Length: 368
Image (cartoon, rainbow, N blue to C red):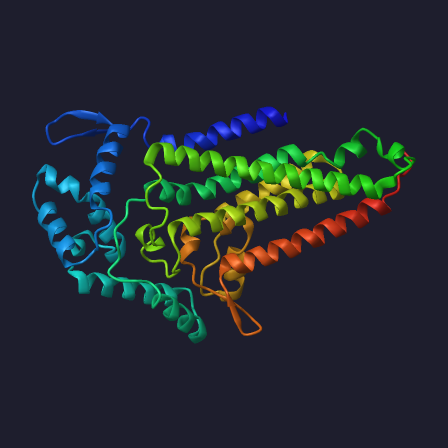
């Protein structure tokens, strides 16, 4: 079951990036029909030609002039047009905005986002300080390979949870189902060593799954779109983010958090396995929790419940969280959502492992 589940999940993981290209077709200006992959390669070459150029009045004028013509030249600037549209939020404004208007629109959007997220004066001051570390005008960089990783992390998170739920749900419950718990009570080493061995094995298994899933996703994205833009500013991919980091550092942050989440998922699954003593029940609880977070959203105006809800592992790993600017203040220090989550997940993992150990060691076989 484990081998089959892992093989199917890894195949699905590799297919996420391919799904955007398979089955799609486009019509060129010459009336020729080309595949989605050919269109992607064409767009990639145009974008690479523009990489390294500042998004200033010169580039904006070239883009707007090209977009105003129904010629092939418009395709050469399509990547910049799409990027500018992300900032302005309006296709017409993207064709008229100059450098001053573009970055003014970005500041206005940031102000709107901060107001919607109900940021305090201290949080706004913190992010204004981070904004000063971001150089403008932005330097355009082709980074679709890494942007694809940001897009896929949400799906990878759910794949990881389901795979761990399937593979680890019977680690402890199977002892009760097969009634081997009676034998374990009589072993020389006792249950303490066995519990530690199982917990460590489960954590190792979850971490290996996380590394495999993330690696397959990254490798697939790079093979399709290329590895360009690793050292570019994060704003080259997510222009509304106020984090003064590179694209590569953001990817590595997601990878580390993905590993920490895998540990939490593994321990939580094994804890439920001991509590419920039924693998189907464990999978039902975890799958139900996953579906719940997919269907339910808490609005920003409920500041504390919304912030806590968005720190859940099933809601945190999603691209837009990279511009969630709500902070947690601890002893005068501001922590971002990723920093807060890493600490909280580590503490929760330790507490669940300790609680599971107490339950396991105190369990007594009742009459059957």
